Image 1: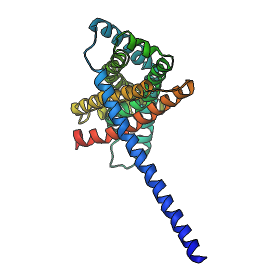
Image 2 (image 1 turned 90 degrees about the vertical axis):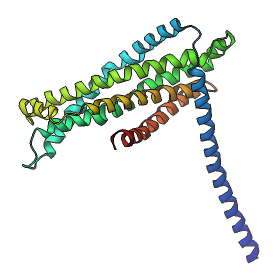
Image 3 (image 1 turned 90 degrees about the horizontal axis):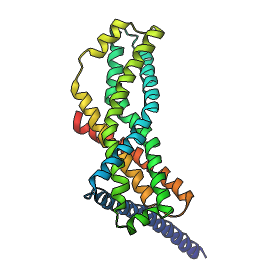
Image 4 (image 1 turned 120 degrees about the vertical axis):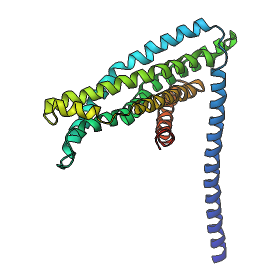
Length: 274
């Protein structure tokens, strides 16, 4: 009786281990499958366009919709981020050995190196990424993409390529806009709250300035833009089912692109600044 019970227990443990292994192996296989299908889609996306003039017009349309339409939220977030950094820096720089103009340095470097390229890209991944995934996903479930394929049009190139190009072109513009507004927001709120003077703040933002930091930020902005445009497009393009699945594809696109942005933020920082 005891031997039978021990055999049953061992059988359950073995079965549990096999199930866990199958789950892990299945997730790895699914990951490799999605990576492969993503790169195949990107190859189709950047194939030679049928008519360049049509694609050029679509790029400008997407810049207007995705880029210019994001100016408002970028402006609001950047101003308040700059203001918060200024007040927090002034509050923490209480050591008399630290000059007060270090507040301006902190705001400048924080906005240029990290907040403008990375945080703004995460915000855009939520706004633009969800829009791209839901738009393409809706076209998939309503068979509009199938209609384009029947007419002999490369649907991946026609739908996705202009969006990616528009994001990669206009995202550095948004990042520069964010840098300027963040530094100005810190300046205005710093003067309003009295934590820093006009002279000290200007000295701080000009002290030991490295132009390469701006180049580094723009490189990150271009890479992040490619991610938050292409990853949601991939999830939207391969949507199956109905409106519920469109929502799921949109969520996946935003989540995965956000994770990849953070991962590439670390990689690019190590490559370009280390």
